Image 1 (cartoon, rainbow, N blue to C red):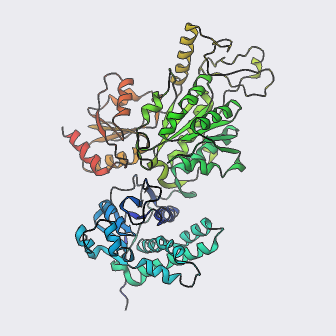
Image 2: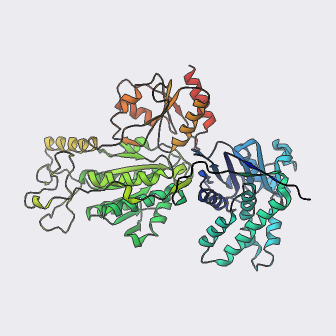
Length: 616
């Protein structure tokens, strides 16, 4: 009689898929996260790409990872360490084992651990488990490669095509381990390979084989685990990446404003997916142009804004450097423009597939002259939708370029996204020049309350005008080199930004009596929130204030930062937010926690560092 498996319920679990960059680990991880999000689990993912375009097969530098953290209740990070590690070859085990918990289950393809594979991965002997101190009882070792070949022997596929399905066997085994519904995975594959039904059928067959292998052998594990969603909120959900959510946010804002959306872009990691996604939506009034270089991408978006569209340009840190002249053109012309900066590791080419927060001061000051721009930083993959909408609304209503900052971690990571109702979002009302001003209007005539100049879209009779990069007279719009006029225009452009109303800074946790206030911005929100939760669970009085709106700062910023006896600003740079806050808040001297590793914060390290500050 077969052993009856016990179904154990878990609150959360983290799974890490790893293998060669051609092994489909990102796809396997995406499908597993989609399956989990569809059943209502909270998820947080972290794709960890190699920087090599295509490293030699089996090499240590070519390993690609994808970690997904699923929970019955809200999860804020992909997890410091994983509970299950899938290692499709020896190099993956060698480089990724450090991300596994001490008691983690490890799934390996024994066919990829031959003598040559071990040598490439720098193992000293064939006892690779002993060499790494891994308990064999925790290892689910199966000949995945051979089993996939056997499974697809009658498919008519060549061996190379068969081996591309190995990731699906591992996925099937993981789906069995966590009692996932395979039909969701099947539907995902049918949609992805709609034009290649044979490929979809082969992958579906292999997923089922992996699931059956786990079911029939119990895979050295005596339990199947289930993660039940605790707080289900009705609605339609999808697993969405930050880049896709950003693209959707721009589309929603353009629709709400009644405008066409134009994206002028030049491909750059990790921002290119926004261009790819928007290019699919011509039916929604979206125009995308892949320009010859970064400055052309930005300049074309400025032109689209002058013509009356929502102009957007997307890039990463190196592209912001190149776009700066065209961005400044939008500053002096006072035209709406959204500049998306998906931050990556630098300087120069740096770490193009890794994540940092090192562009903040560039966003605030990285242009010639006094050139103020609002800066917004998205806090999570799903928040990218709201952040993109807010950036577009701010640009359109205040006639200014706005920088929207995300980062590689947020942009490539994913989470369960409840599809929003656009009717719930605030109206977007561009300041079109009133018809009654016809005859008395000049290009820099402003709304006296907001300081925003009126927008005269080309084609309106009686509102012909010229804009350009030379300073203009405040009254007539003619070119002016008058020193007093330039001083006035400089102040008017700054005051317009200062008058923008942004939400107050919210304080979470022990907001009334915290001994330590944690401060951060952008994509570190989940890790800082998790660190706060852990410290509070230890009995410490801790609060969190996380900045989404960085310029202008929320009106209550100084009040919040001066309320607590100890404040630590934690960021993935050398202290850029801390420096900005010291500039804007008198006598603010915070503690700092800074890392520039190209990797997300580890919650355990944050907790240790923050405890040291509390106990100082």
